[in-house]
Image: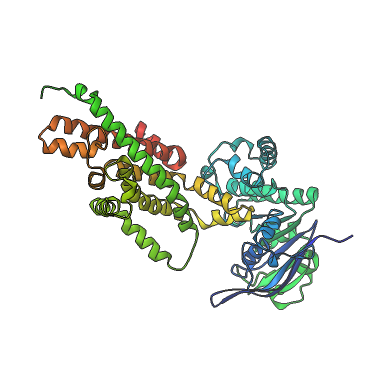
Length: 246
Length: 236
């Protein structure tokens, strides 16, 4: 049986003079939470945006089940974008109520009204947001807003879930809710989950595989136990010991 | 002149003038919106070479002098002009055309501004959900709805109060091309200030209701504004 996976090969990306990604090789498997850990500015967000086909790499390819996504035309890319969902670091909210904010992806996919209502109500209940469904999204707290963004992603039942530091700047209670829902979703649906963070505790708690991204390069990767307990690289060791301040 | 305000306002001619003014301005603004909204939104979303020049041009055209528009249109539509055979001069159609020309840059410019205020992240999120270009257009339309409505209302306000261009191409013909503004001009020059004032009051009331409508829309669609508006209303 072929294991579903997303893979990037020799990925390069620059913004002007700044080299953000420098020859990245990375893969993530279905049913596992893969964590990309690294300091701010190491290229985590850019990598996720390239995986989500929102950015085009200067060089290199993205493969999903051995299909090269970066070579597809706009319609082809859109087909695969619809198999993914991304949660951004800063909550992105539309100027409407919570229900509409969560429903937008389903509406873009052309689902019928009653299907949209049922699926959105279910996910709102899962994330403890049902009582806010008619509340305007701009009136939510930071934690509630990020839960809305996670609901918007999960309601699509994506094959690939991309999470860009979803719990940074959140209080422990909201962090706990989000982490539990991610774990539960991964257990039930078995998608490919790629999570970026600079929080070691979160990586230890959620991930099965960890990769350290530093200055646009993957320094080291491995299963969570080996990565944190037996790091091979000096940079990883410094990171694990908290000597690299993020 | 012994006529009182209610007598004048319910005068057949005044009613006809008011209705014609609204018909011309509504048609011109509806056409301008249909033409300009996609352009304003595209301008807000796309980056291209020469965008700054296009924006400068739009901003300049927003302040287009009505008499100049009227003059150029007159030359184009007059019998010896290239569009003379269409026989549009001194018709409501020519007046619609004049107002349309002036409304287009207003709707483009203000809807561009409205779209520019949408955070880049919202556009990125919409792409990330797999939206087509048309779906993105609808999302942008919804996100910038208050600003876009403001652009339409502003265009209407400008159109209904415009006098120079429509005077030149419409000719102020009684029961045919006479509007509120051209009638005010005429009655003022004739010394019939009571009718001129009545027509002026109708124009002012129109402007007042346009602003009430706009404020209502803003309060309805922006929760922060709505809270402030409520506090203002109840004085707490």
